[in-house]
Length: 201
Image 1: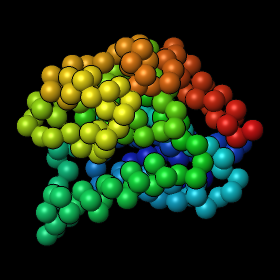
Image 2: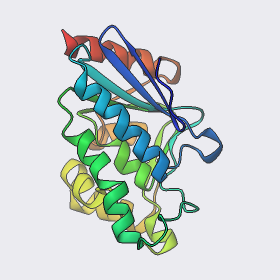
Image 3: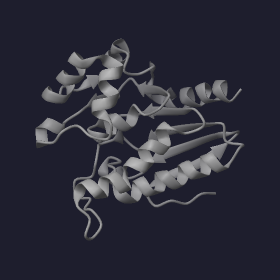
Image 4: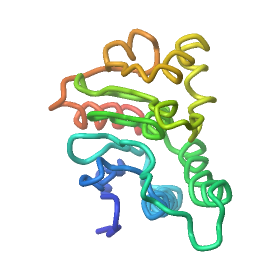
């Protein structure tokens, strides 16, 4: 049994499921969560019996982005804190030695939108939506959005998402090629597990 402060982590039949679990904050990312995710990825990498990883969210959101109440450690500027606290975790997910499936339930906003697109496969529930929101608060898109989105949906659509904050439904995301499949809400994790079993075989 694994115990973390901000995530749930289970392993069954060679498949690890990592669930973002800050429901009161719609699973917003903070330094503690990024450290917990990094620790979970280390478990995946060190256990040869784990053959696939699923990342999803608890409650009604996948991830609402970065927690704006999350302050850098004492003495760190924002850029240094993000590069030290966030980038290694994102890199670990992107370079994970087993297939990573993101199962997107509910909204994936801001940094959470980029986080949802890190997987090798991205499966979304029909009620899921994707939105950038950065320009609404005067920030440039981060956590890899400027790298990931144009490569998935093209420069024009990516710019529109980033500049207008238009929410993109799961069905539209599928049509645009941003995600790999769109499934019923109740079957989301089961569908991700089914794909994981295919990959582990």
